[in-house]
Amino acid sequence: RRFYRADADKALLPFLEAALADLPAAETWHVSQPHRRRRFYRADTIAEREAGDHEDTSDEEGSDDSSDESDDGDAAAREKSKRDKARKETWHVKYYMTFAKFHQFWDGLKMSPKPECDFCWTQIQSFLKGSTNSLFSGEPLSEREYLADEGEAAAISRRRALGLSRAQREQAYQVFKHYERFLEDNKYWDAADREVALVQRVLRDGFANGRAPFDRVYVDEVQDMTQASLAVLLLAVGGDATRLYCCGDTAQAIQDGVAFRFSDLRETIYELGKELEGRAGRLKGARALLAARGVAGDEDRSKKLYKLTKNYRAHAGVLGAANAILELVHGAFPNAVDKTEADSGVALGPRPTFATDEAVLRDVPSGARLLFRSDALAAAQERIGAKGRQVEKDRERIIAEADAAGAADNKASRCFERLAAIRGDRSAEADAHVEEALAARSGEQQAYDARAANQKTARKELLARRSAWREEERRLRAAARSALERRENGEKKLRQQAERRRKKADAQADADAAAAHEELYAAEAQRQIERHMAKQQ
Image 1 (cartoon, one colour):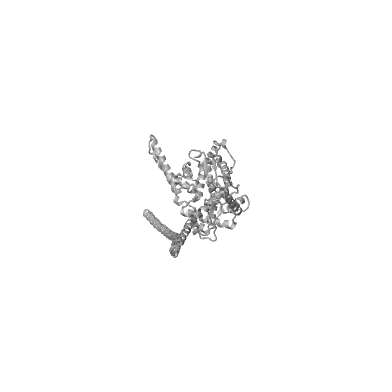
Image 2: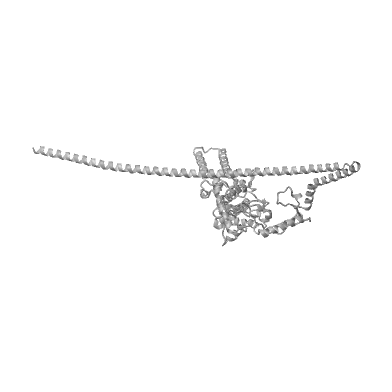
């Protein structure tokens, strides 16, 4: 995606994330969110912010009221640096899930049958996670929502089907479940994760200065964007569609994972406006965006969709062939691209020629066919046949020389021998060149197969080690639980023995005390008797 370039800090999403208002330290709403939705908010995690607040509080209690403003500025700079560092670690580029990485995951997925890789990627990025239905709820579509065949969700479900059966879509959703577990286990994130998190934060907390970062946004190649990407662009201009200018052609879509229709853009504009109005009463971000809409740009508001059908780059011959191919696409895949008015050229030109000449296609992989302009085909044939014509000229020259020499001194046989030698040498050179090219291609193919085999072996070894680690972890946990149970049983027995001993000691002490009391009572009675008898005497 163009949102994620090598210089990621200068791309659109990091810029918008840096422009967000800070998440308040007391807010804990995101902790209950699933792992993929909590990623962005790790930039303001509760633990980090509570630690920062504790340090700031201790500094304030031990500082004098006359502390200068530079200390406050340094503290703010440190806090911003901490947030920026956490954000970069959260969305680290090495954990970004691309289509190539997804293809590797798909190759290693033990599932039969499973849909095609590109179909699964499109369903995940464009519908399950990147559509407006999942964008504003903050969660991917449930299996019931994705497979709905009746009710208000049926039209959306048919739009997602792209002509495939319910059974195939059920298989695609199973792939999606495995994919989500893979992301969580390996800390990966994809474009939809980051875009949905950003949209949720903007709707909740808004931008730091209370207004959108851009006054106008101009977008080319809009057909290579999902609804989540379009929502990000809309929020970049405050949700005001009159300040967003988009241009694209669904017949030129090349982005993996995107199934764009212009109706998606209209739906995104409508759903975002409805979300802003619905959340304005309880979320300050939505309230600020809704208040700022319409402040600028009302005078040039335009709802017209301009259809650009005049082509200044290609002549009518090429456009005719392209339009014929698009007609076949519309007939075979009616939900794949928008049905638009055919392009027309401002200049006439010859029809393209479909080349099947082996001399033209000898360096093209087997089964491929090239579409040339007629003049380009003639030029290619001219270049390719130049060496052959030179050989023919040499042959004619040598034959002429041989005829002239043969008339003089009967040297024609030597000339023909010379001609045969030259032809043989050039044929050998051509054969050597072909053999060298084939050998090079064979070597490249073998190297590629070797790398693929090594990668597959490495993946298998990694999966085996991971399985062994998990098995070892389960064994250790079971052993720990068993040891804990034995310890608890032992402690219970010791407590029971101590209780019995205490009761026995208490009973013995009571008996001894009773006996001592009886002895004292008897001794006292004897003394009283003796005193009484002494008085009588």
